[in-house]
Structure formats: structure tokens, C-alpha cells
Image (cartoon, rainbow, N blue to C red; front, top):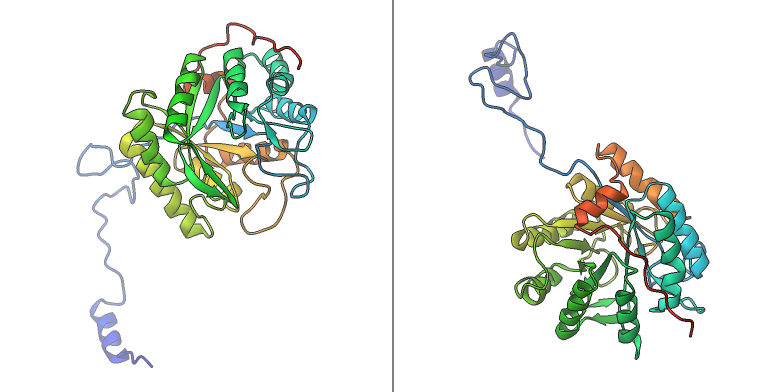
Length: 344
């Protein structure tokens, strides 16, 4: 057991006349957060972070079925209704996948048109991006049809080779390079999607250094899913996001970075991102949990958007409008309707 020399403590208290040392050299001011009485240089200035917070809503994604979240929008009409609901409620942008009749991700031009055409008509300023990951025979041509139609303002490019849950997910270098070329030719904005910090190096080597993507670029950080940057506790979340963002900033100092509320980290990693001056993606694509420490399921994309809006409020960063987000992204104004696709 530790022994404290209370006699020495008592002598020390007496030597200090039972009081602290206090010399207020700045009187009459006690504490000034902005200035010093000794010079006129500023002491503490406002942080250099974006005033506005872009809040994207990812409507359904490719992963989760009704067995995992009964509220998941699967049918085209449900996806459209959910996207329309959040657009009306103030989302900065929406991210779209479409599913087949069995609930699996599909690159169907018809279904993309079914969902996105009405959004462009009702919300002409809204940036709509869509995930086009050709994984099956014939999907490469379907991806090209969607891009050529002009439906999308932006599209992610996944610079990864990782396991997502029990599935191996690899974007070979030639495929990612050619896909970026096609996105650029379609007049859309390529968004670099990274799942681990190693993916940042892949993007730099294969896309940025060759000049296919110019900096500052648009980055999507998707951590916390099984196989992605692990975020099994608050320390891992803070360390992991900081490391990935630092890796991006090393090669792209002025990058536009959006962090997905994903996996268990869910709303907490989105809050951390907003505090770091980044932007956030919420919704039902990247998680079905509201919080890391509870099992509450997301009830709707509108609920997820409301959480994002609350994050914006408490961090003092108003949600960017669709027009402001379009300017952030550098996406041109939409000047023509998307080309229709014949049935069949």
C-alpha cells in the first residue's frame, strides 16, 4: 500500500500560505479566448472547416434484405418513394441502387430510369449518384447503358480488394481504370470509394497519378463493415477514421471527403466525421443499426436523414442544399433529360 508523507504535505501547504499562486497580469481581463494583453496577434481563430454539411442519403444499397431489416426498401416504387421523401425533407443528395424481384442488386437500366427519372423531374437541382458495380455476365454493358443515358450526376469507383462479410470484393486495376474513363466520358463525377486505408494508395496509383481523376477529388469513406476498416469500439473508430482521412489528405490536401454511417459505428462515425469538418452519408445502405451500443433498427431513410440533420444542428453546420452540394461536387447543371430505355 502506498504511504503518503502527510507531514511534508502539511509543511508545503503552510509554505504556500494555504493558497494557490495567482498573478493576473492581464487585468482587468481575467481570461480572453481571442487576445493577449501583451500583443495584438489573434490567439484563437475560427476553425477552418466547411460551414455547410452535405448530408447524402443512401436509399437501399446492395446488401440488406427484409430478413435483416423488415423496413428495407426493395421494390422500385419503394426505393423511389423513400428517395422522394428524403429529397422533400432536405437531403443534400441521394445515392441509388436498384434491386431485382428477389431483392438482389441489379444493373437494370429500366429500373434505374423508373426510380431516377421522377426524381430529376421533381427535383431538377438534386444530384443523384448511383452505384454501378458489374459483377455478373452482361452487367458491364448494362452499366454503360446507364452511364450513357445521362441519368447519373456522379458514380462511385471502388478502389478495393477486400472481403465484405463473407464475399470477396475486388475491383481489378484495368476495370477500375476503364470505369473511370466511362464515367468521365458520360459527364458524371467519379467518386473514389475506399473501404480501408490501403484503398487510398490504390486510388492514388491507378487513378490520380495517371490523371484520370483530378484533385481535389471526391472521396467516399466506407468503414466499419466486416472486412473494412475495423471500428469495434470508440478508440478504433477514432483511430481508423483519422488514419484514413490523413492518408487521403497526404495525396489530396483539399479533398472533398464524405464518410458513410456504416456498420456498428453507424451514427457515431457520422457524428465524428461532421466534427472533423467532413461530410456524411446516412441511410439504409451501409447499416441497419441506429447506434453502436444498441440494436435499434433504422425504421426509414427519413429517420436516418433526421439524425443527419440533428448532427448538423449540434455541430453548427447547416445542411447543404442540393444546389450547394452540386457546387461542392463540381457537377454541371442538368441541361437535358436522360435518354429513355426501351423495355426488354
